[in-house]
Image (cartoon, rainbow, N blue to C red; front, side):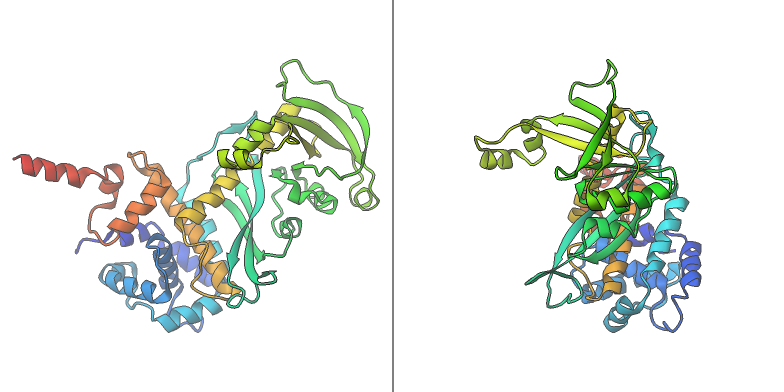
Length: 406
């Protein structure tokens, strides 16, 4: 058997049974004589891992791997027209299904903490969105501003696995709270979100589904104070207040009528600016700048004020996730212009991220994600053993030095 290139070795991590089950669920190969789901999936993975710039790049790269890909059941590489046609036509949910099944198959070890301030991390999900700007003349369905297009990735993120639970893609104009209705978490989970999700109707939906929420409160929300709770002696000093409130605004009080907890947290101005970077601190500081407070609201009466604070602090992990995928995968430019193509490429990006996480976790070498992606791109056409290379990426260099010394 001929030696496999690096990319086909990575592709073998996806069991054919998972792809076949997703195919059958969505009937995705019906009428697709020239491009089945497996070939389509590997084309997208090659786009992400190989940083291919166009459909032509993907097709040419697939031709180079064809002898190895035959062992995976692929007899013919896709043409540019066939790939373009299926990008526009194929239901992207087939790739979402493959991602969900692959998460269970690979048995990812949790990257996050086992607990967040005494709460099992498996119960905690983070909710946020990220905007990807596009050319409005090409992506006419993705309206955003007068002369600019964009999509918004509304993402529900697992604190246990550090992976998306679900993603909903909308045009850039859709607000965060509107997109959240497409991503309802499971019962008994705790959802943590920023003030873009300060929506009393959304809170009612979460509450009726048995979901605990921790959301940053907007300053213009009207409420009455019901009761102030004592803070335990071991409460951190930056937690200023823990009280019960009831919404009183005309619309908000009708949407959500139950009592809420309001926790006020002190955030020094210097810490606030450190999250934005030193350059932002230098250029934006004015005599009027001062220390800030964050107001958090939750529907859970049993969480301590410290737990509420720690849960909201964990929300920064989803920002790190958005940064990782935008820097390492092809999320900011797309191989197709309709919504099907965009959604398919995004879900295949999640599959690529899942495979990279699996490789990183099982390697003995302490990889950083950016270095792993970069070196995979450089070594993609090499016939080195994937496991040996992951455990010791410098092994070939060391052998060469030994040969020179002899």
